[in-house]
Length: 218
Image 1: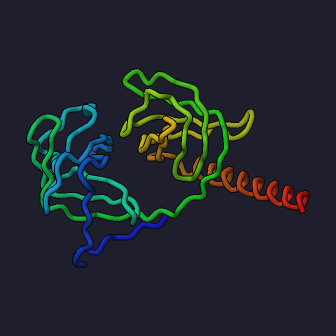
Image 2: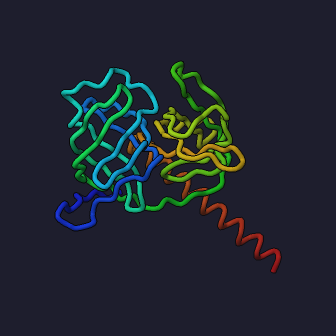
Image 3: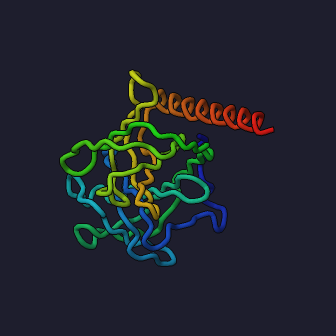
């Protein structure tokens, strides 16, 4: 992925997330808190926390919060003046872009692999399986208890007897069949390389099978 600094002097450069969009607040400690846009003004956002922070927000750290979201350009990170209106409600004003992380469109391949998900305050593990996989996320068969915006720990087994690929992700969508789409938030470079290689090998194998079927039919 490619990182570039956003140019703050370009008119129209700053695009804000829409009302009801799921965003992430990153604290100076690195803790990530899921939130939702409750109200959007011309130059301000009212942000509602979806989950309680591990440690209550302090006034001294408010202006150092980073608001992170994804749009067509990639992953956008903003900062500004922040006021705590209620315990779980923040008003952002004077937002300015810090950086835009432009991520390649990853190839998504249909593949069923065992996946273990840990979620909730107890971090209890649930076994499920992938419906499709890419270098940026997965579509999961379940569990049905996962909600949009929820952060999970995941482990996916890509090879029998091999070390699972692990990381953290956010549930970003639930489709009409009740399947959960997760977007990767944290994954080591080594595991990410392994995952991209696995997806590429699956895609190559699928193409080979398609050519073989085409040859037989011809």
